[in-house]
Image 1 (cartoon, rainbow, N blue to C red):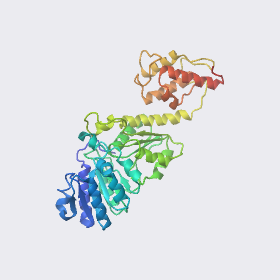
Image 2: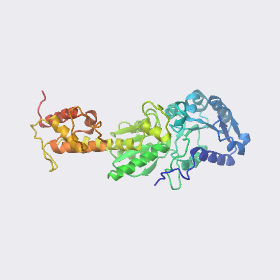
Image 3: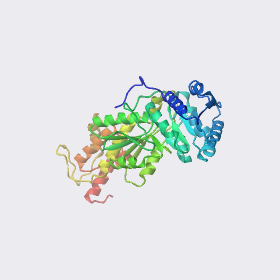
Length: 422
């Protein structure tokens, strides 16, 4: 069970600062490097003034200093926004820290669109792609503030560089019970067998759980797997969950390339597992929105996850179902024989019946008329019952207009009866 409000929830930056102070109290090697992010000077700096250094808005310089300290036996924790850490100071990150495999902890706040109100300069939608491409670094993305303490304890003594991606403000908690964290291990948040949703980050995980509940209300079983550690990825859990369902939907607060979706795709490789990605697409930042609103407008939402899951289920359902001419469900009012040709007016009537509208024309499109992935599955069931033709969901999504779908149905009807088309 999860919370649906932020009442009593700690924001990730405050939870992180407390965890950092706790580490510093037990390990004198901990040093804190800041770039005027605000807040650390009043917390860590006040408690350990001799181990706090604010270099100003100079991220590249901070990484160089951190590399030198790490080479001398310290464990530096560096702090800036995610986009500045990976893009503005990317060269120093690559050469000074990762190139030398130094134990520098890059703590990147304002990940994804959590700083949406600041404008496009503060969006971080490519940072995980950069970190994965550089290699050698451990990458962790907590889903709520309760995970941060156990994450920090696990990362502290871990060899080599690490990247901790945090948001900015409070989000509802994913976990209500005591949180355990194992570096490199995924967490099952919901059991299911129809489809597997693999999500990473605060809002994507919350949205995945929301979609799972909505699917359950329609008697569909959704497995939700939370990725806390992107690198190294828990490939065993990913493969097991993917192969135990119809397919996989990945959800992330990142561009489609280079992040969770690519990592899962690389893991699944040649396995015959359908995979759809819910990620940030298109132009972002055309207007000022809060965090969740900006993410939903860019294509990442519970509804998008639900629809992708339904497409996965439909793909498996119709891809494996052989054509069975003459078979009906016994309730059809119009059955097309093997020698018939389906007229477009008949398909239009089925559109109108499924969508509950009065009139449909040849040029109309199913989704423009208000169709959804769920009603698309119903339409294909009706077509199968009325005509004996089973249209694969992939073919339907490529031919959603009345005229186009009529051609698909007739082509499959001709093929099933062994006739040659002119």
